[in-house]
Length: 248
Length: 81
Image (tube, rainbow over all chains, first blue to last red; front, side):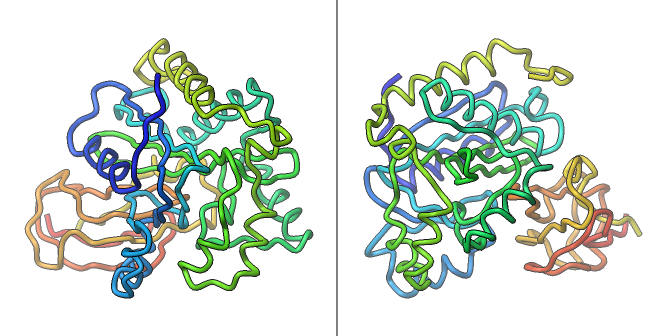
């Protein structure tokens, strides 16, 4: 499978198209945005409208996604996954936390297979993880996806976030989206675009990590991560039954 | 009156005390709706859920406005079936 080069707008269009009709089989897309862009959570509509009225979209692509959570700075530093599932798929038929659990674990296992120490954060350990970060002077920044933690997102041993997750559920199917940091994003760019002080960029830097950092700057080629994720998804989603009651 | 709620499935395994947010209303008070029709979008733990009409009827009252939060079991609207 080759690396898909995309834009933030194209990604959101693909996502919308998947749930516009009934999803019959699992479908996914893994890619990277060559140009920087900001993808805002559905509840950040006011920020989206403000950025458009200020003409910021002339500087950078600014789009609104249909799932929740904070802003994501997409670009060559982040691998994006969109995964559409039938409503009766084993990953989708239970609550949304179950879907997050399956995808978070798949990412963590894939990362560990690639030499990155990572685990999916179970809900029972969420509070401890947040407290540990806060004790280091790193409060959550809910306006940014990577500034906060949610259940089953993927972190390293220090609780620094590597993979962010979000989801959209409709009667036609479930759409899971994930972003894996392969290199360190320019967090100052995100703060500047959203009118947050630059000191918050340092908090974002310290609350997150990336594959290159975890592999001590000998990064795995993007195409290898894509192949590994594709293989893991193929194994987990198409080899397993497409009906409920199967605990993957 | 029939209450319009976010399904129990959406709240599965969610800690008590966590609230959902009404992201967008797709209908207004007085609108006629069909059973299963999407009425609103709500966000819970980064998941955007479609809230659908539990019966065919008319939207009587919107109880939770866009941008407001609500707890498990709280009706966000009432429907006159």
